[in-house]
Length: 131
Image 1: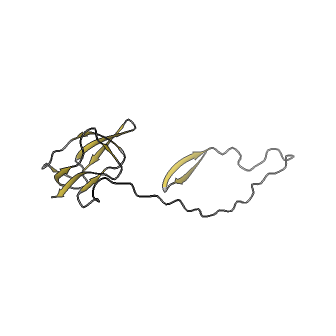
Image 2 (image 1 turned 90 degrees about the horizontal axis):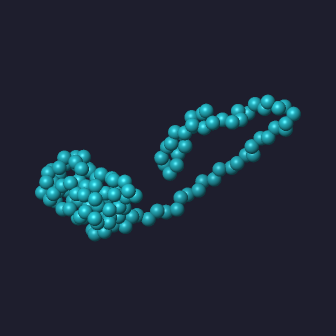
Image 3 (image 1 turned 45 degrees about the vertical axis):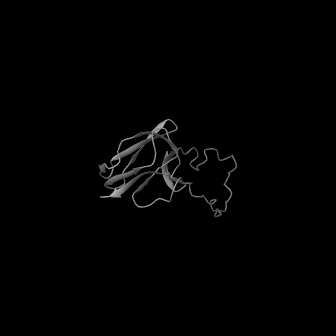
């Protein structure tokens, strides 16, 4: 087994690969087979459009949705002071819950969604005023 690192879409993965043929040939009568040289070419990825947003562009203190999904619950109220990493709400996507946390300390100024609402990636969910 050999440990290799493979990068896919910029994210590295460590994988174990089983080496079936280490290059030594136990049967010298069999003709040697060598891999052909393969030239590499740079291929650029297609342009990715920015996710669509509901409402005005995000501003300082805006907490965007990390993914498309459905709002399950909201854990804060308008006027509530929160610390960084306080859970603000819960989203559901593909039967899995994703928790959305405050990026910094502040006060909840506006909650722009309600439980049951469908949201898109990048859509502003909550607006915080900085503490």
